[in-house]
Length: 172
Image (cartoon, rainbow, N blue to C red; front, side, top):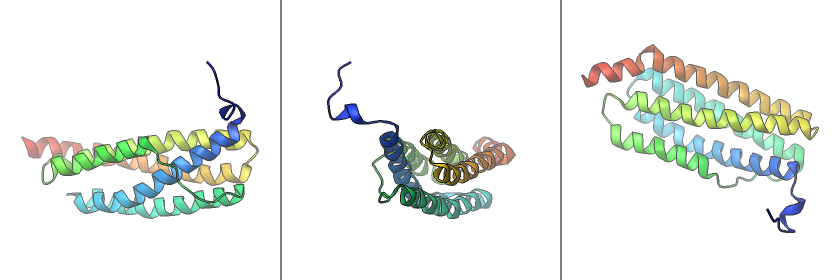
């Protein structure tokens, strides 16, 4: 496979920075999506989960800005087609299931798709930060990863704790 001269100098540092820009863009988009999801949710517990995660996500954006600062780089996002697609699916659920018994179950599933993407991205960034000797950045990213994992578990509990069953029962 031929490489162009321009790309032949790109290494792990460049990949780390590009991925950091990607997740920064994603987190900023998530901050905009969560209030819409909270407002649309039928169940109070679902709305509360989205509102709680909104506050966490805002803190995660600040943590990412600290990582950019550690690198001496401006905090800038880079368009992330993956998160755009995942959030678009969530928007479709909002539109197609508004007022329907399956809405909350669909919103929880959409939120978990976001969480799984974030967990994968943060895990990779932590590994790369360690390899690059960016210990402080790795610690900041680890704090966010831990929050994302807790949110994913909370969303699973919401689904298993009645949201999925309600969607099935109320549709019958």
